Image (cartoon, rainbow, N blue to C red; front, top):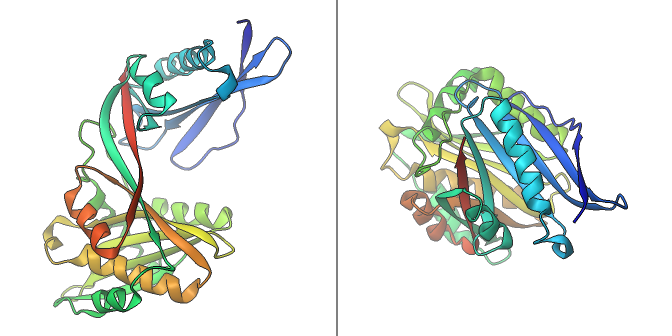
Length: 293
């Protein structure tokens, strides 16, 4: 089928990445599909690119996706990338497409949702209010307070050993500038970022954190961004504690919010147990694919 692949200018440039885009059209100029390639630019991830390909259902199996994929992969090579990752719903057309084109499955993910109208608030309150000797909870909305910024940036190392199986994800290097930039990006989208952190009372440092992003109108579903506990503080129930407190607070601040979304690697047994304990219900599964260049 004759088609044209046109490179586009994508304005989605962040402090940690930039994005390239392509549009596939037929001879009549009607759009058939698109591809986006995110190139990570921060130290620790400059070897990596992330791919999204979408083809109109009526145009699949006609070579559109392959042409878009070829253009994106060629650019990733030109940019000196070592790996391209892409995600697909388990059993979806994208799942079959990627596996047939040299991508290798490296990670399985389970997506889950907490329906807030059905949550046992008394139980959530009991978990959040149970003391954890040696620790106290703190929280903030938006950008981290200056007094906690350095400690919060250091606590992001808790995500360094997050189970990623065989994914060539690299290491996300966090500093104060990056945590502030991430919070500002959420605010620019008109959304609300809420962070709950566990503080080690012996020295005032942050031992762990959980982040939750809520739509600007306080309706629909919120999204968990990350939950992590530094290695020296694990095994004390801090992840469950912080996440329960986040649920309790979001119910108070956003009473019209419908639910909370999260995704967890199937190999991350501790976080899956936390989600199960809090009442999150699995909704679907996804597969992370990787292509070595």
